Length: 133
Image 1: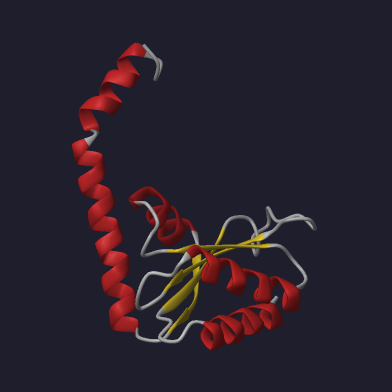
Image 2 (image 1 turned 30 degrees about the horizontal axis):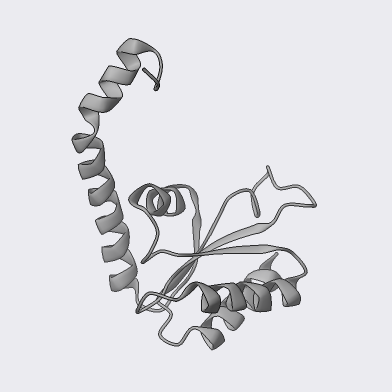
């Protein structure tokens, strides 16, 4: 797997000028991975990426490592998705530790705010025992 990680970092850095960080999340690289598992990656670029560029980078990585790749731009991801990546994933690359750590702190703070804002909704769902009606 170390060779694959090196390939991922090399290709992402080459194709994403100013790349700040790369995260692996999902089952790949964990005991839950299967032979047919795809690779879920998230990148923190300096500026948001258009979906075509994101798809092209994912395809370039997939060709080299021989597995399907799902690639997420953390600048465009939802708060919940960012939290999933940061809290359950693994950082594979970081060009600037201060920026990486500030972004991760921001994600945790944003997620805490979101939970505060939706606390009443979640309590209501818990009391009713259902999300719907």
